[in-house]
Amino acid sequence: MRHQRKNNFFSRQHSPGNNASYNKIDFGTYVCPLCGNIISDLTAAIDYGEGHQPAHLDCVLNLLSEQENVPDNQRLIYIGAGQFAIVSFSPEFRIIKRIAYETKEFVPEWRNNIKKIFFQSNKIQ
Ligand SMILES: [Zn+2]
Image (cartoon, rainbow, N blue to C red; front, top):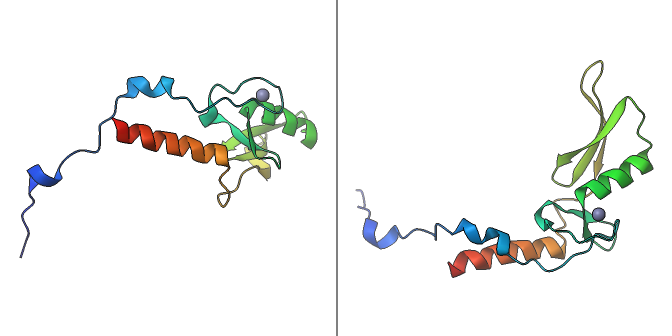
């Protein structure tokens, strides 16, 4: 036995959204603890330090390459999800060391706020 779908009743779409408003979303003002400049793209920021503040990805990259003393034939890159890696490209691509800056278990408050704001703005439309 099959139930027939009542299309008109249930097929209300979850707001298709108006992407034009994306740039206007205000996440609050966060200042990068490493360079002191405002972080304009919070969605690309990295959770930094014990205070769990957002920091520019580039600033964390610079700091880490200083700390890790990356040799000339290796490079420090961002591999996503709050993780960095020291890699070498020759004779073949190889990950020398992984550096986890964020863990899946802990979500900093500022990133939770991003989620909340996206959720709310989705509902309003
Ligand atoms: Zn910075």
